[in-house]
Length: 165
Image (cartoon, rainbow, N blue to C red):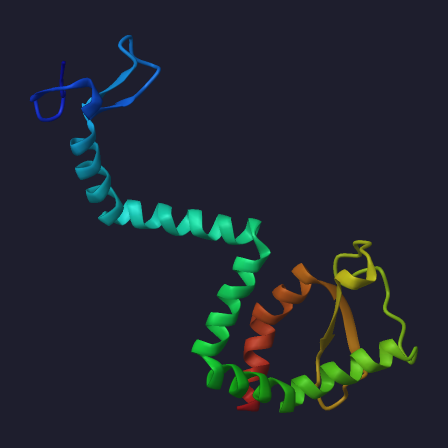
């Protein structure tokens, strides 16, 4: 017989989970109290957040779960997916991007291994083509991802895009 530290009721040892850390090898709270606590915790904000993190970690470990999740997201937003991909594909930016890709593929342009902004040496796969003018698709500056991102968020880019609209 043992008393639960949560509810204070004296119960049989079978009502307590096995816990090797205690001298009597039983948990200090009865199974019923632990179940109530766990149910409340799972419904709390923190409990939901932790479950979400565990699910994401599990999806990263198991590729079939990751595929299933992306497939569900695709079917859930199928129309938006097609509209956005068609907009990108048929936009001036999309066409310029394709032309540069094909020019590199067929050897008309060689992709450098050095960023034009920070002069960092990187593998060609990590160098991006930046268009100053999309109407001239083969006139590009080659930049690393960090410099390319800065170029698009810089004040010059915002001023130029507001003039075009």
